[in-house]
Image 1 (cartoon, helix red, strand yellow):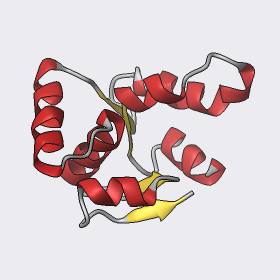
Image 2 (cartoon, helix red, strand yellow):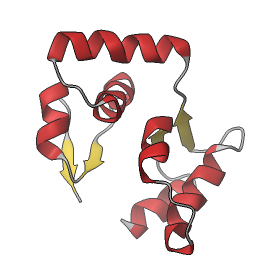
Image 3 (cartoon, rainbow, N blue to C red):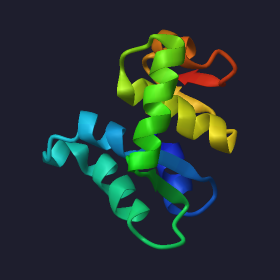
Length: 110
């Protein structure tokens, strides 16, 4: 996981971080230094770390997908939508939950 973080911070790979994920995991403690580094990188223009914002349009897309899949977790749905749009794999500990939203995604268990 640290190697993926380093690759993203050095511009080797693009990482998309949905805003809802930040809200779900952020606790503001020193133990979250790596999350903080990703968030900070995502705030810089042209960064390989992209923050997928929870805009009004994105909220509607999430709501539609929840209606289609009956999956109630907006974070899972936001992750699945952002990954599918970019053709990205999803790094997750919730493989089964993300798969309920989109079975075509490549899921990497962490």
